[in-house]
Amino acid sequence: MKHILSKSNRGLLAQFAWSNVLLGFDFDGTLAPIVSSPNEARLRPRTRRLLRGVAGLYPCVVISGRAQADVSRRMSGVGILEVIGNHGSEPWASTDKLLRDVARWQPLLEEQLAPFRGVKIENKQLSVAVHYRQSRQKKLVKRAIAHAASLLGKVRVIGGKQVVNILPEGAPHKGTALERARASHGCDTAIFVGDDETDEDVFTLDQPGQLVTMRVGAKGSSAATYCLRNQDEIDALLEELTRLRRRTGARA
Ligand SMILES: [Mg+2]
Image (cartoon, rainbow, N blue to C red; front, top):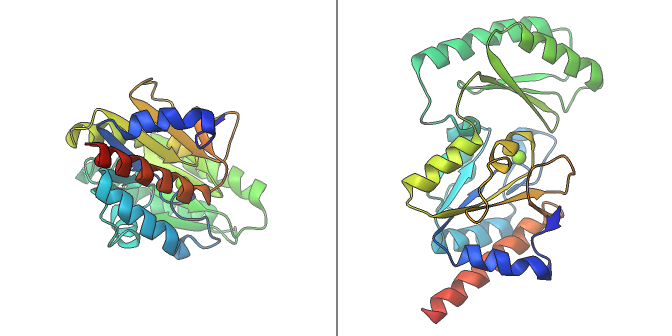
């Protein structure tokens, strides 16, 4: 995986920055550091300040697995154009049928996972996240979650960092969401930064010249083309994006 901030790749970043580009970011592990309790996740003050500047120079969207209201609250005051939740489903894909389907999962999952300590079932209405960061029997718990999910019927299961995401089969994903946002905001190109399994739905969109994908943390099995070395480097990326657009503005 190539480092996007290395000298040799800065030209490509500049090309995209100077195009009619949409910036898309995942939240947890990308804009905000991973923390032991998901509820504590927040932007560092420096990231918040940089992102506010970037949002004034570029159209920006956040596409998160969290519920839309949850991320919106954490992004308030930043000036992001749009926050898309539930891995790309919220707000567009909300239908009574999907809400009913997901509501039906809750008691089943609770019953199956009741014997395990440190497991938290988060119902986000259009998807469910089963967190096991606090569990001491992670292997066992992962197997139990997989089994429980298999009892739910037509679902899509996406792993993640100490979490298993359960989505309705065929629901929109982050790739769908980014494409939709790019079209609806009239952009020609997009840059997307993510860090986890559900971001692979964007990373696997194959649109050379139109889309640049970056993963926080290099990983051989990821479909992202570029990487940031760690979450701290999101600040360096935001600084570089700021510098590039300021320069364009100065030239125009
Ligand atoms: Mg993430």
